[in-house]
Length: 168
Image 1: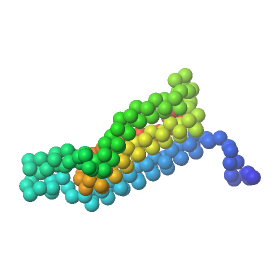
Image 2: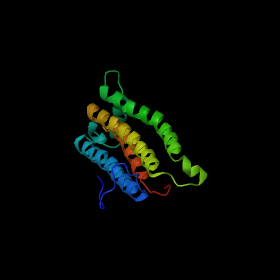
Image 3: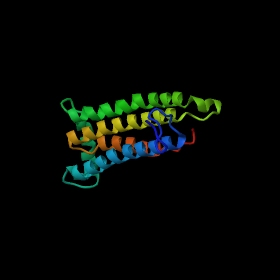
Image 4: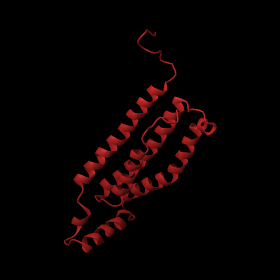
């Protein structure tokens, strides 16, 4: 039952309410994996500390970590690979889906609020899943590279894909 202060449950979303929901969703998609990324960076040993030397030796140890992360028996390494493959395959596909959700803009019309939220949330979800897979791989291998780098790129792309509402 609706009264004067509350909209009915099945009322269509307005542009303003959709933009607020988009900002909340985006903030969650940045904050949760971003905080987890910070925790992983804090807990895992730095790439340069893997060996006894600094400089070139530390870089060599980091490179050995990258190749060792995807060894045949490394579940964590395969999670990093799964994150990269997920982003490589689903990244372009999700932009096609968002374009479909934003098809009203092709004709110069504003995008429906529900379509705007679906299109943007789907992009954020795909990027977050890829980043989380890579972070899981980094934790399981106990190495920064390549998992933290993949997760950092995915979270950075979520940050860049912030909601603007211009299409609505």
